Length: 384
Image (cartoon, rainbow, N blue to C red; front, side, top):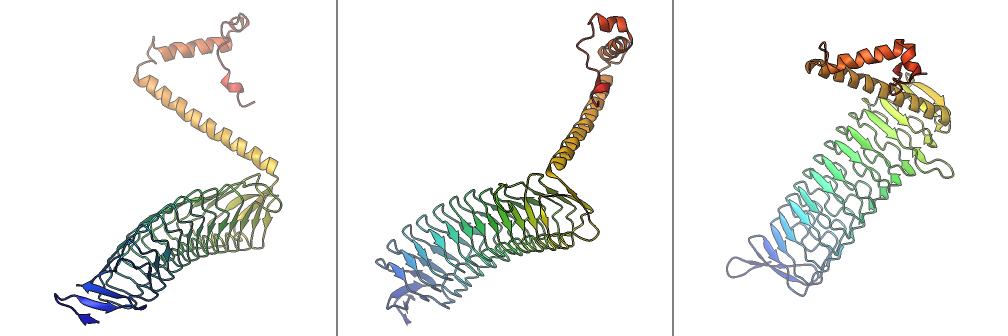
């Protein structure tokens, strides 16, 4: 490094390139197409970088441990981002990635603790292992349309991450991809998702709402283990193919201490491994006889009722009818109160007149015979 007139410095980079840096701000030379591996490794005085339009590739560990780097402008033509390129850039606050980028490499932004915003273009199809591991200031995330996979530990320990929008194109979520995201409150997974990896949402202790895919899905071991705020889970039927439509791995929901309601679809062929619901608050659960249940899948205090799918559907229909009946009686009570407030129960009120006509229909056979009451429904016979 040598000092130039005006206080600027000339930094010699790996690969023979020289870069002028002024007060920590670097301008990469036009004509550079690839930033070499480890180009700025450990340059703790680096504050910002302006990239030339010619740049198409950033090498491995290019900005590793540049702890003062706060901003970088990516050129539109960038197509490759190297392994751990920005690992340990703890002051980097935002990253708007260009449309030409097809993937984010492993550990690309690992431990960028100040990163609050990431712009992911629709061209990205995969996010590598540990890509945003320990980005503890990242609060929200929209995964781009076209994304098919999120790698193992991709967003591990993003402790401020409260919301994620998953695209309909997503096929797999890697092991521990969103583990230890303590602020994550809601997860709605798309029907395209086929694999939820081991420990994918392990210890997401604020998770209260979970929407699972309706298609054929594999839920890995420990996938939702320790999600201590989750109270209910509905497991859809999935697509009936050879074998089982849904697989729930060992300890998948273990330690979900508030989980007291698990609903299995009557039409689903589900494989439930041992310990899947260990440590949950379930007192009773109904499981179809078409499901395969492993040893100790449920707590010893849980009553497990095994029913054929047809009978489960019948119980569901009865439950829906009873729910309607309870709702209907409540609505009728509300209408009665409204009628009272409107004075329709007065001596000549409309409600009083209606009740009198219904009474006369019920206890006057001659009127029933002449059909004058044919429009009145006998509610007492509805339950027969």
